Length: 497
Image 1 (cartoon, one colour):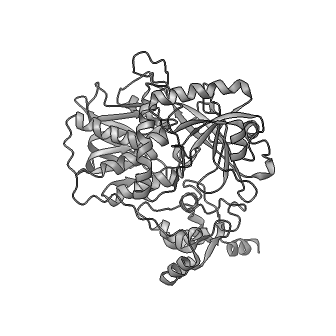
Image 2 (tube, rainbow, N blue to C red):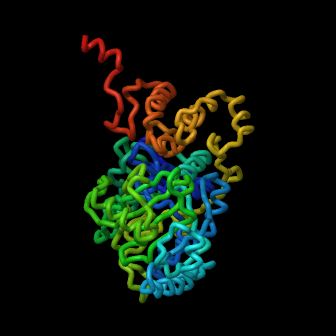
Image 3 (cartoon, one colour):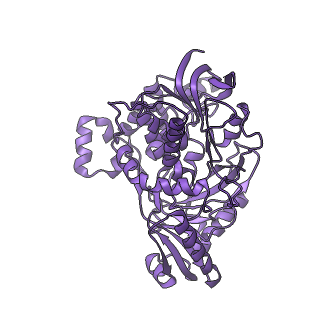
């Protein structure tokens, strides 16, 4: 084994990165491995971007406990880590009188779960608050602790703060197996070699079942990827005032219509189980389902408003709730198994996984302490991850000041989102560097406007090549074989001659 760490975290989604950030407070050597070329690029980059109040999970489940425990942590985290977060509240909207009784059921469940700040809003009041809402609205549950965030921004901020506090992150590094001696995990095998450890934390999301099975844990546990498809609407044509859910189904929270911290309206998701852990393709039927579901809440939605589509996969598990008397077949797993030493096992972290992630991280710390791990706080731990300049949010005076320090902030690369060369370069040289076009896009929101990257792509390709010291033909969209260019245009002309 080339190197040995106190803790290896398997998986660089929001749960893994949040756990790394909280653990970085202690005198521990920590390695986080992520199989993709960038952190947070799977489930954590493709969801509804909401922090749920906690009235939806079944009472007594770990989902409910973690969700409600995490809600009070988010405001302070957003201030320390400087990610986008807006506590706007959310609404569960009843359409027609027949759906009204379900709102009362949600209120009662929310009270059992410990959710505060809930109230029932009349149909007349909803029509005043949201002019675009379905006129047949009969009432709504308003929960004041509901919030919007940028889920990738949250993941990145936690990862960067972890790195600032000494955590090592290796991307493009896939878990292959555990090294086990005398029923204790002593290392992890990856595609980049083996690493020793005293503890391994399984935060592998969609692959958490594969990882735990390698340790002989919960052989009956299975992750079933649940695909959710989404539509993004042009904010120049369409804007909502808040976050609107339909009354939930047994499978999901339903197809919702929500504003976002970036100003775009998002519709979705669908909820269809599949076997493939990698298939995130959109389908005509799925997108039509999203459109029809969105129109139930906001009837004026038109396909002409759509500027982008995407799909995400949720890590739906089959672990039963361990609270006696609670009939719930797909709860979170957050445990130290008794059958093997040195493993913290996290699985089935589907919705509300993003919302719950800070509380899950703190629960991991409690489990380690209960297992006898002596966690000593660092005297120099820094909880602050400084924000980088965002040109589109600056006043003219602020823009002038940053341009005087670095003229690259005066060169706009993405006109739709007002992203500058200075911002792109800063992300390429950040604590968790952006090395692909999609990595730049997720960090700066470049390429997400009406032109969908049609204007900025050649310039971004050039900047990435220049800053990374590679050929422009080696610049990729998302790693692997997703390169944009085959050869320089001049070479093509010479070959044609």
